[in-house]
Image 1: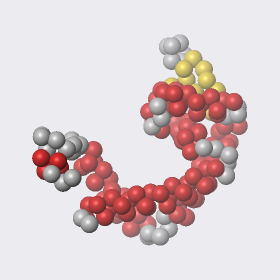
Image 2: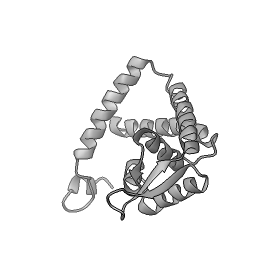
Image 3: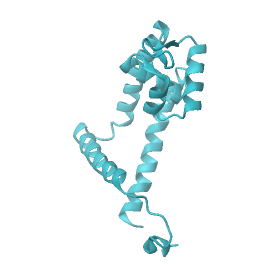
Image 4: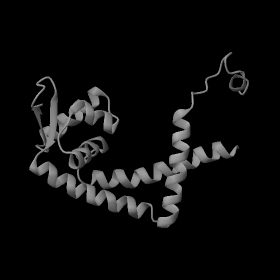
Length: 157
């Protein structure tokens, strides 16, 4: 197995382990992870257009609408028209939503810190720096696809 493939598998397993801690904590507040992500963005960014929230939490148009609908049905968020562009629908936390988001986020931070305690703070900083470097590099690459334009990939079937 190549070092790159080994790294990929380690990243997948590590992500799954950390995600399990994060999801369990979020579920303890009777929230799905996408709903928590919406609350967290609004807690830290205040009022935002629905489509911008979707982009920030990586949800499709339909999924962000469903998430906001769920949160609105629980009186955690409210929609309103943009003050200067009535075509734009904005979302903000209600008082109950702000209180829940603050408590959930505080617990979320604790859960992530607990799950990450296998590394020292310095090791966490090193890992973060290396993963950022790798992520930036990969983001700039053209994807490799098998075919005549890329015979090296095509021959590795």
